[in-house]
Length: 405
Ligand SMILES: *Cc1c(COP(=O)(O)O)cnc(C)c1O
Image (cartoon, rainbow, N blue to C red; front, side, top):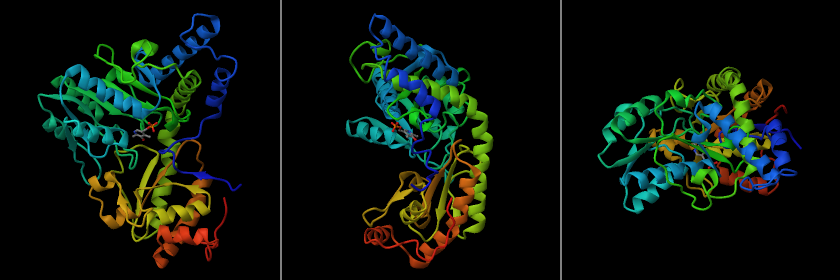
């Protein structure tokens, strides 16, 4: 098999070998139910509590403030649900660029008759505290804005937004999925009531997440059932995955410095070289106020999905900012909210890096990208046509003499 160059770490990440190793005993010998009284149950219970302490250490909070969930989507849903139930208020404030795990929940609440304010963002994807302040109402139950955007990496001023919300007595939740393991987080110094994270975005497996619930904040569960997680989330604990999440948190802490130096340098080298070597390319979003691993690049005059198909021929994985599978282009709500011109939005690709990427991989992609973009532009190639040609057995990389990694 051809080597894969994986530049799509905001979509998901590989499970780190030591995370996998830590998990295995809990899929084999230590299968006891963490709620059982006998010894193998105690063993798994202790493992869950160790993982809770490990996640808490990464976030700078107390272990009892961590609730394990099935995914960040569940964590996000839970925070908003709890705030609406405990306050009895019927208005929520979110940004216009939230992940679908918030956006679609907010739209669902609107259909149920709740009030939702969607805060617009500036052309560079940023949001101000003043915008949040102006959106607050007497019946606002919760403000929920992401810490960093998954498409552009642009960060929001959550420390200041937290201060504002606390001073107004409004609950504050942040979807921190794209920040955990990439930027330092110290909840002890922040006025945040709820924070969501997903294991699979920082080298734990899919299917496990966590919700930070600040102590003394009133809480009602979303998944109602047994008394697991001290009554905060029903359902038998997914012990192996929780153990994996704990180990990933330990490693994230260790790798934090590397993320903000070596990974940032890889991203910057990639981005700057693309801008210099491929004409009519642009960065979406504020280049200073963003996570160190993300680059959202607009290539004018091409369909992003066509570029993805070509890159895939060379084993390179990235993500399109807009979907054009059916021939008509659906522009991402994030790029739309930023007012990115349609031509650029259609040609936007997201490259997202991790500590598992190397400079050799960056050099490889930099070596092939300019020729691929030039070919697609010259042929005005559409993704749909490229797929048809691939299906017909045609060599779509014909005429491109490119090195292999
Ligand atoms: C990936 C992601 C989620 C959803 O995580 P799941 O594990 O799929 O539930 C939520 N928010 C952001 C910002 C994400 O990047």
